[in-house]
Image (cartoon, rainbow, N blue to C red):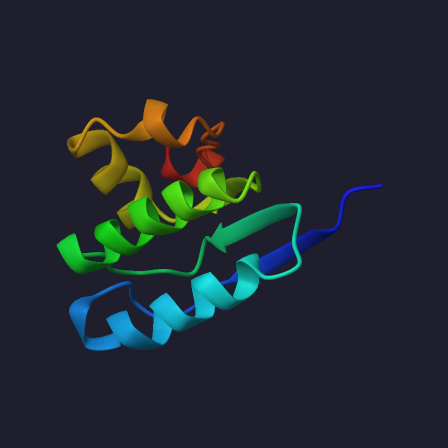
Length: 101
């Protein structure tokens, strides 16, 4: 059975927290076969945060680790859509009923 880890990031994925999150993401890959990211509470993301997600996805692929975002906050969803990266991450995006227009 695959070793599955889950990492929930509650802080903003911004340049102000970039080094902390980089260490957290790379550390979470250690010993994992599957890493699930819960970004449902991440209120803000900037280009530094987006670069961290790209780095984590690529590093996971290099190590043959399945990395997926299992919960997207509106900010994460909007940024991935705006940058046309939803397909790169390949995760299903669930929109809560209260967010639908």
